Length: 195
Ligand code: SF4
Image (cartoon, rainbow, N blue to C red; front, side, top):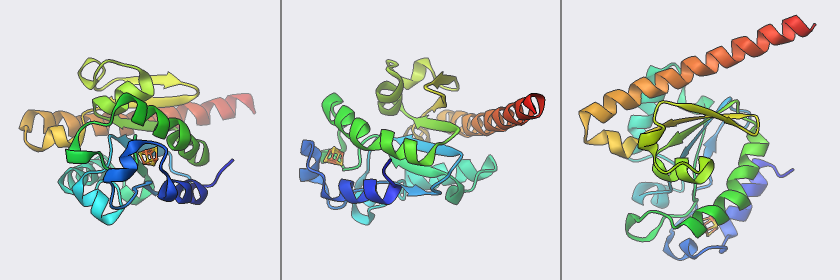
């Protein structure tokens, strides 16, 4: 199994899909290597591309605020995206670009971190990881797949300019945290029962 550093180094040199042409820096992701929670967005924006770090612009500040309000410090989670290179003109990554990047890198990052929960931000993440048509059909819901619990909510960019979406987004992140605590309590109880 690859380490997060090995995956990040491969990403740095990657030209597997056309998005390498529009990047300044690759954005592999950052956070705790043994995080209980992974957060997966769509792809790097302008500031993320410039800095090589995920969610550092306005959307990122909103995400950090929502996580902290729910009791999750940003440094405690691992934050990344479906694609690791910025699409030109901030367009959505194409299905083949998403598939290439997720199958080559994101699944290996997940195997390295082994999160209890993956929070999916927005339709691109929900479509790519769960095959759902859009985030609106699954927002606020959790799904278990391959022993990982996926929780779906808006991308923070959708919450930036819409107060109703922002309220919902903050509530969803709190709900995800509560679900995480329930999962941990259930696992602890099961361990005690099995002992
Ligand atoms: S988006 Fe992913 S697959 Fe495409 S070039 Fe960048 S790292 Fe490689």
